[in-house]
Length: 287
Image 1 (tube, rainbow, N blue to C red):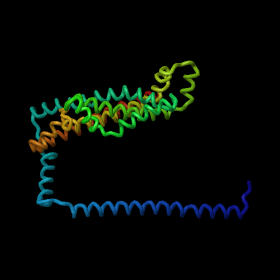
Image 2 (image 1 turned 180 degrees about the vertical axis):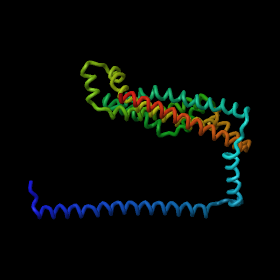
Image 3 (image 1 turned 90 degrees about the vertical axis):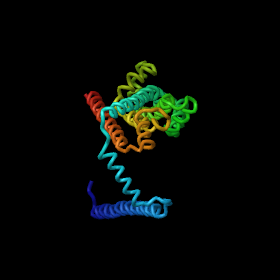
Image 4 (image 1 turned 135 degrees about the horizontal axis):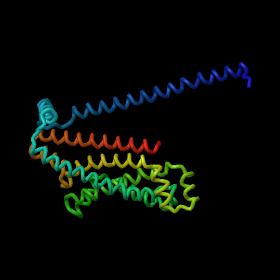
């Protein structure tokens, strides 16, 4: 195809006119972001200037806060008896997070299958999706407090609350992974005469295994963080309760620093384990 000179000028004119428009859009977005950040910074500064501090001297309180941070992170308390007691509490919190994650994985996958639109009709999946959306809309700590009214403060309410929210969270994540599968693979299993659960076990699970592992370990980390917070709020014990007692009653910031370091080390270990397992399964699936 031969392009006439007039066509060439038209092409060059159109390309030249489109470039400044894209630059203008980027400049407008950047300016809008600067305005938003400036407004937020101004509101933050105004709130600090107008807030009611009572009789607390701001400079003295800030210096004491920095001293407490020094006690926590630079001078943590380290002793055999303390570490032994805290390790038992840490194992309780870790066991709570692992148990609730296993419950969430099992029942969450069932809800994911029932809510996947490429496996069942939308009339049936709407019910499962609505139930999971309602459960996810309520924070985990509120579910624990609701169950604490029925079961009383303790480990039972923590297990029920964490498990219920884990089921809804993983059910949504798993169902999205199932719906991302192509219909060709599922239709081939159905055409071969495989039943519903045979299609799920032999066609769905092997295809989304890396996603299942990734979402499960993400929920494990979330449950560990929630278990630390719930330890004091619901009386479930564990490392969270020890943190609450050391900070709110004993005012032992040296012990608080030790607890914070133990929580950070455990979270890092969980992340390293999750990364290694994900790498192993991804390598095996690619082979």
